Length: 311
Image 1 (cartoon, rainbow, N blue to C red):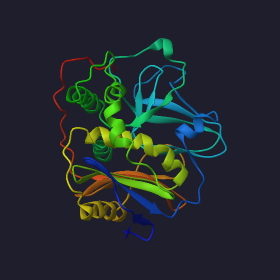
Image 2: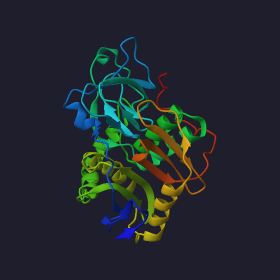
Image 3: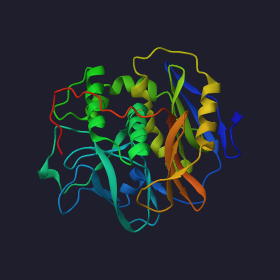
């Protein structure tokens, strides 16, 4: 093990072909909170606006007795079209919030399903998708929906998966057996509060959630995203020094206050070597996601003419 900061320790990696995942151990937060999937069984929900669905915003209701963490990149399925949360949000107990999202299903806008509640997906977005959203959010305050749709189309092509509704979820479904080989080989260990994923030897994401039970619930979803990025890559020896540098850079980087609903304070980090963001509450880190950093390109990828985006 390697002690990276007073609060974070890097354990030995779990390796499955081109994917290696380093457990991150550390001091848990004193705040008790739940994941979205844990809270759904207690009555929490995500739904469209009652006054009319909006592509870029959903409503979250939390009638439970604890705050709920909505993780950036976490996908929810159903209603008028599938979405992902754009930023991590710590939603208060007993309240409702409007939450920023991106559409992950370009070809469906089903008004007949507008009243249904969303279901937690078995996956998050992959690290490259999450990183692109974060770079744009840190730069201009909001993820770029066109860039997200471009990314979905590119992944359908890369994985030879067709989807009638242009859904990112269908890419995962089309590769689920292959994903199981990689994601099924990594698992949370006792007291784990985070992970660093590497693909073909290089780190692609750091995820920290400072409640071990919440992280354990989120980990299989994160692992599906890690595995999607690793599929069809070559196996390369992991450079542990690069992993340690990413974690140290993410924890030492200056934090800028960011706009996000919920309790606590949202923050963004943007340096030459790392980009990311997260949430603190009463001075304690609740959540952090970080990715190898570089400046956003400033332009949109040329969009394939397969489907017309819905506004």
